[in-house]
Amino acid sequence: SQTIHQWPATLVQPVGSPLSLECTVEGTSNPNLYWYRQAAGRGLQLLFYSVGIGQISSEVPQNLSASRPQDRQFILSSKKLLLSDSGFYLCAWSSDNSPLHFGNGTRLTVT
Amino acid sequence: RKEVEQDPGPFNVPEGATVAFNCTYSNSASQSFFWYRQDCRKEPKLLMSVYSSGNEDGRFTAQLNRASQYISLLIRDSKLSDSATYLCVVNRNTGGFKTIFGAGTRLFVKA
Image 1 (cartoon, rainbow over the protein chains, first blue to last red):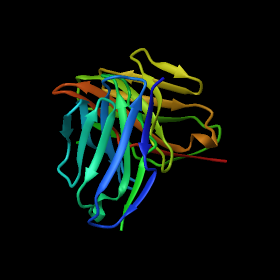
Image 2 (tube, rainbow over the protein chains, first blue to last red):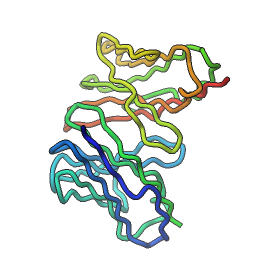
Image 3 (spheres, rainbow over the protein chains, first blue to last red):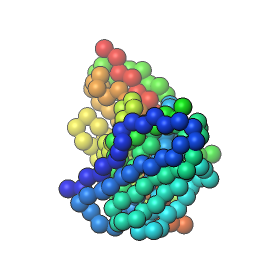
Image 4 (cartoon, helix red, strand yellow):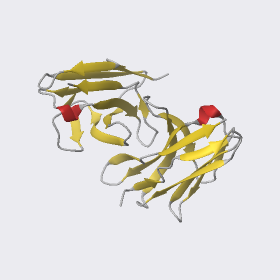
């Protein structure tokens, strides 16, 4: 069966520091991969999605970037965090036209 | 206007009640439909897919009306543990494959 791993679960970082969140999927090949952010009490905002290695689409202009160095690995990064980057970050995977399956999420607090 | 719209609620119902949520989508090219459940500070989890003929899973019934472009979720005999946010989700493949999340409907079930 397919599983998705996301880490760390929580993170507290100072403003201006770098960020790297990692997500890996097991049990499937060539998945669609996604990074979402959810602010407190708000809906899900799609940040990036990828349909293959090295293929990244950005949904909104922002302080973040994403990379997919391997088929089942998706990384979210920032060179310098802003206070507004705080939120709940969720990685997800899917096959075309199938429902998304989410990782457990990373709660990021930028101080 | 958002592509997927839900009443944000909250819906406050007593245990044992029947509650219904509706969701409308604006893109007639939408192909597949789902309901997710999200508990506070947790990742969204797939509750059920929604099929054209309607489908039932225990106390939960989902229906799709393509002509009117709405999806519904009915919960019978509500339990305290049903308290959560319910997200309506739509997949479409126009201009690239996309998954669109509604902002969610908050449900509180009280003893």
